[in-house]
Length: 133
Length: 133
DNA sequence: CTTGACCTTCCAGTAACTAGAAGGATTAAA
DNA sequence: TTTAATCCTTCTAGTTACTGGAAGGTCAAG
Image (cartoon, rainbow over all chains, first blue to last red; front, top):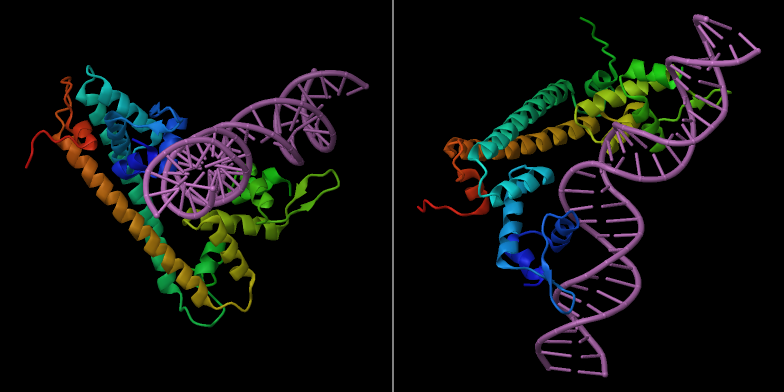
């Protein structure tokens, strides 16, 4: 299959598929005209990559997942710990974003938001509180 | 003040401060020996940038915030809408991360996580469900 | 035989830094 | 005074995961 077809099947843009080849995630064959030629197995790998990326795994993690997937002797515990680690990372990120959001929401609430030039948001970012304690 | 001092005051690494100069966020003077020389105002700007970045504003948004901060005629509503937009963006990101997290948690729960080679996580990522409907 | 839709490679850009090399300036100690 | 440590300078390149675009080869249809 040509790259356009592989793209449709896997849901990844052609550019991305070529990029994945560049970084040695996949190695399709070549047709006599020089075009990349994707096997069923290649399409499968691309789809796998697409889903893993959507789940938030980095490229390097995907590389590991692929090798685990292809390793008939690997234990499922390796994969499970990878997944649980990722969950912890995501939780941390969510906590950070939540506190950022709360801060911004508070600032926006305090701001009258009209044409007056004084603005509590900017004042607080700048560290100038003109209403001390 | 030298860059090292500016770094301590603002909490930004020297590298970052030089980078901010590269992209025209700040323009410190120069001492006779060629060293960058930061004024009180410069330190203030750097601290402002540090906090705004921590609040999740992009560099370009920081540039806008700085110009709004220095514009005596701007209305607080401009800043408020910027902040509220940012809140909405953050909420979207949190929702995405939450659904990623739920998916991964479910997969990890389904995984026995021992030495047996079959692994529901990899199977699901690959799209091979061996327990149909 | 030309047109258009494919495909190829290669180069550059994105965001926001960070690391490191090579070398000059300053300061304190020996 | 020399030397060593610590600053500072510029410049290049690497990071992550692509994305856009240019210049050009291939293929199928009319």
